[in-house]
Image 1 (cartoon, rainbow, N blue to C red):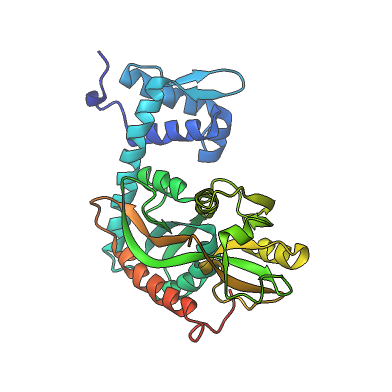
Image 2: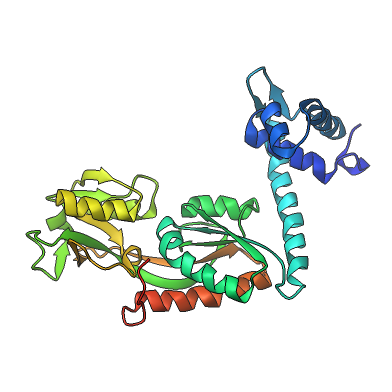
Length: 312
């Protein structure tokens, strides 16, 4: 009986299966990994023969994983992730002289915080190639589990199975046009904002979830005038439409108000904790250990207007 223990299954087979599963087509996967379509089909057939199960359902238009294929991919993701981690750890043994580092971050942090962080990190470790992916915390959890990224920077307490380390805490704030009727207040309430159409992030963002919960707690129905993921677009919309925007305070770090002002929100306060996310029980690589102090230092500078002199 075929068995994975008979040495017929190799890492290349697992990489090929992942490529086909991601592409949904032998033709597209072959083009992406540099093989001919017949060669790739033969390699997948060898894997299926070695395991004794059918891994893909094939049609003229697409290929999909079978239930057995889904199970194999779960293990394959961990195996390939461990192998990649081993290679990166060996790179780290060269005293951070070479290697790669992949990070996932919330969009607001990727746009303002990380460019400054990576500039300093590159100055200290010029031969380490860093890749930053903008994603939600749920996507970070999946990406860390399958080895796509090694470190996430996002909201703590929302993803089971990840170890969190606090970076900073922040509140959501109201961004108002300078001539807004509430502009003479230092603090605004959810009840006051609920009377107006507001500018918010799209569904799926953690900020949107906090807003929904706060409005529900106040027994108010939120009225959305605009849904945008870009901070710049939200600020332009505030000045242009007069509708308030609800944003994390970190989204405004280093920015100079132009046609808008910021006010705290109370009753209730919307607060979140931002931190580093890694796998439970894992030991951070030297590259991550070198990056984290830089992130902390830049965060302190951006959060303190007296230290932040350059706009994002």
